[in-house]
Image (cartoon, rainbow, N blue to C red; front, side, top):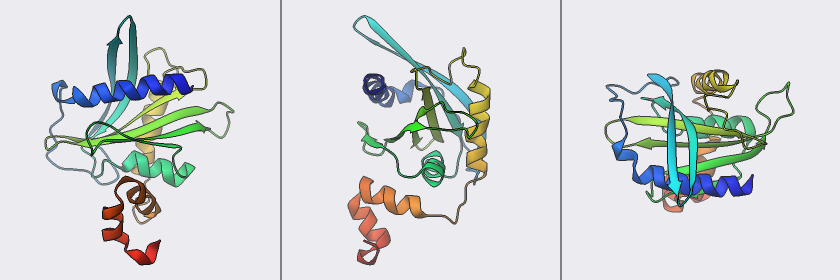
Length: 186
């Protein structure tokens, strides 16, 4: 799974560079614990002879680009990997070997991110199973279920629970963490 993850992250760097060419959803308002629409975006990157395609579930016009980061943290604890992409404001968090469903022993790689660019604001997720199958691909029998699953996680977000932000900002931007939490919260 590690090799696939490296390719995915390189690919995400590519997505970050080319994000301006995508069709954007204009957000007239941002929804607390909800989203205007969900969709799956297919991205392909060609690197020499190899083509990598991943499917990313995106939840548009959210109040916070951190929604999926936070709800994953609230349910599964701190992420396994923290990646800062070329844009300093775009961060990808990954959870490895997560059992998303209590009635299954299948483990997943879950990666979350979000973006606010002045026109649109979204939170996004991609999921691979332990055999490196893209769970948001058209061939995946779990595609629609997962799209709804993560949408419900956003809707059920516990806004008052704020532990995520303390841990996140300490890793993402220590100066911002000091400003928000001060020395008494070390």
